[in-house]
Length: 260
Image 1 (cartoon, helix red, strand yellow):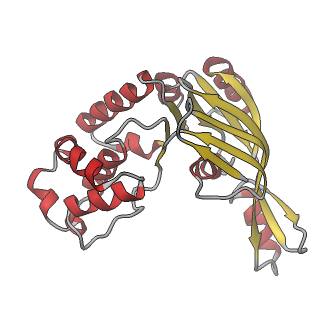
Image 2 (cartoon, one colour):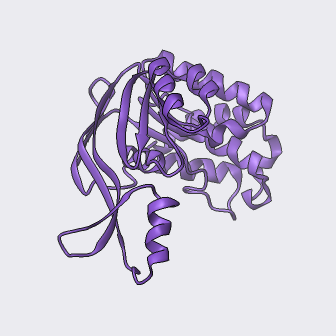
């Protein structure tokens, strides 16, 4: 169950949240082994309809409030991306409750809402609508978005001509054209060039200073310490530890083989 509101202090809370995905082809042991050891990191189980499912998240509970900057850490397949997508409402819980108060801005799917045949300006309008902005709000922010991207005249031509770096600039600028209460990020944003990365850091830092919530999934201890004050350590779809960033990173580094 998911509930939301936009007139209260920013909040994101999970209560015993589980997310399962049915597996429709279960005829070979190799598939099961692949799921268990190389895929989602979840557990195989059966649901009420006796289907084989992967339990991607299991009984996850936590609460974030305004000012929290939280790193999601864990091995590949630990459930970090599933947790981010459940926070954003992309995945619905199989059981449990998700409560959010405040506008959520996800920055982990740069292709969402992009039409390759439209210009950069038209895609700004399209993505703005997907983020819940009115036409007036989008036009108000248009100049700021265009300036932040640094794409200049390229904004007037179809985005199919853009490089991946140009696309990152465009989508990041649109998603951050207002101050979201809850900002969800994957570490792909750290792959930009140095000049853009510096601008991105300044922009996100400004969000956090205005009491927004930041959740960042990353394998980099350096990035986690730089951007976050708390951490959630995920393994096999469950929270292993939630607390102060230094303590969680220390515990994770002692358990994981060679660290992230």
